[in-house]
Image (cartoon, rainbow, N blue to C red; front, side, top):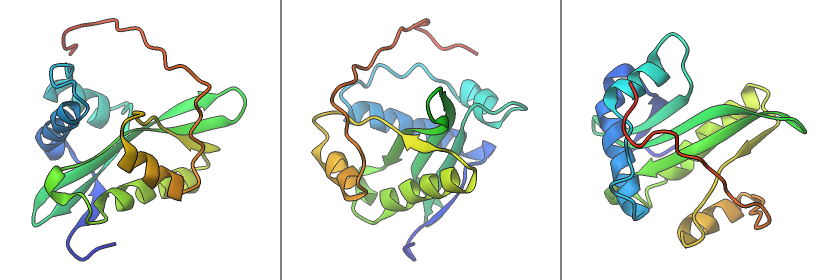
Length: 157
C-alpha cells in the first residue's frame, strides 16, 4: 500500500463523502441524473442494525478519495459470492494505486470470509478498467445479458 493513502472500513461519518463519490462515478459513466440514493438510505442500509453492504474507503491527507462497496450474493452453483458493486476513485487520485488497493482489500475480504467467488460488472467502453481486471485473470464473460427492473424512480427511505 502506498504511503500517500490508507484503506479503512467506511464509517457512518463518511456517508456524505461516499455520496459525492457515487455522484462522481455516475457522471463518469454518463448518467449523472441516475443517482436516487440518499444519505439517509446509505446510513440505514450500510450502517444500521442489518447492513446490506460492506464498504472501504481510501483516505489521503484526511480526505476520502476512493471507495469500494460490496455485498453478498448467493450462487446456486457456487455458494456465497461477494459482489463488488463499485470501486470509485476521484479523477485526481487515479493512477496512484488507490483503485488496486481497494480491489485487493475486497479480494482479501472475500478470501478471509469463505466466499466462493467475487464478481462485478464493467462497462464495455471502460478500457482502463477492463485492462486492469485482465491483469488479475478475471473472466470477462460476453455471454450474459445484464437485466434489471427499476422499482422506484425516487429515493426510498
